[in-house]
Amino acid sequence: MERTLIIVKPDGMQKKLAGEVISRFEKAGLKIVGMKMVNAKSSLLNKHYPDSMAVAITEKAQSKFTEKLDPNVYGIKILKGLRKFLRETPVIVAVLEGENAVAHVRKLCGSTEPISAEPGTIRRDHSDDSYVKANSEKRSIKNILHASGTPEEAKAEISIWFKEKELFNY
Image 1 (cartoon, rainbow, N blue to C red):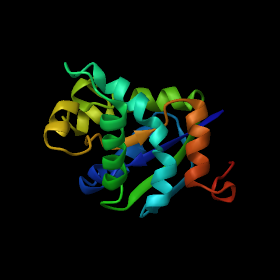
Image 2: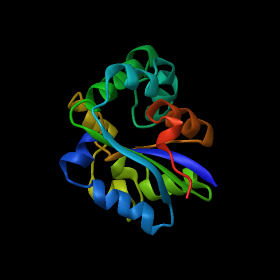
Image 3: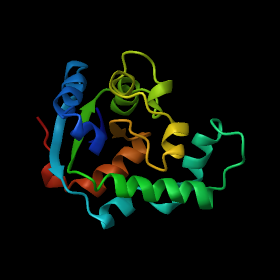
């Protein structure tokens, strides 16, 4: 069994989608082993979205832009925006467990750019945002939720948001 982390972001909370999102994961056979609502503090978000992610974020977005993006400018700006965005409302953080949970959750979520996500995925069903639109409006992309990208990332993220005693085996 594998565990992964999801966060229902402020846009998901504002659209009252938390129950829908959690339900989609449960219906797909994933088990909730930890869940809570939190007002994320800056110190926590700095651990979750460290500056070291700037290069990866920039590389992921580069295909959508004709000009060359600088990770020290673009990536850092995106990280700061994400940290600010996740403080706009309380968020729901959950640890899900199941076979190949990370890949399973990522498939259910769809692309981090909702406009590029497959029909039937959570992000495509509930958002039509794009990197270009978000950048032109100088804001974070509104894609409903965060989902860990790899099993290693999931393990690290879970330890940032949860104490071991907050996770359940059943």
